[in-house]
Image (cartoon, rainbow, N blue to C red; front, side):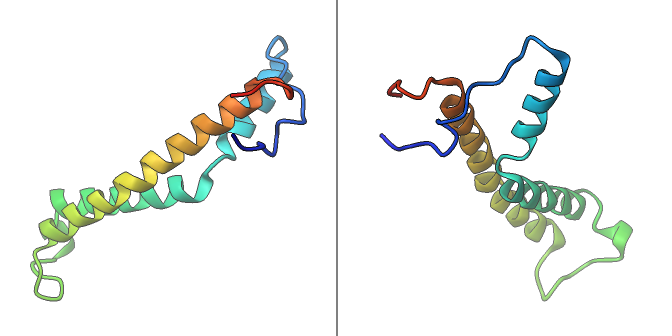
Length: 102
């Protein structure tokens, strides 16, 4: 299908503690930006939905803070799904051998 950029490297050695640590670090570095933006939007949206009065907000540009919070959480959903798909695709590419088709 497509040539994965990490398909020429050997798979991770999960039998050692250092190998498992390196694998966790490598997985954390996949799709950092969409995951980070998604989590920020989700957190901000949740805060606007749950406690707008705690921030002294009763209207933002004529819109309800709860409505804006719902929109932010809705916008976070595709980013979080995309980061999960990218991570799964990366893991699949890393776990296959270079000559295998996936």
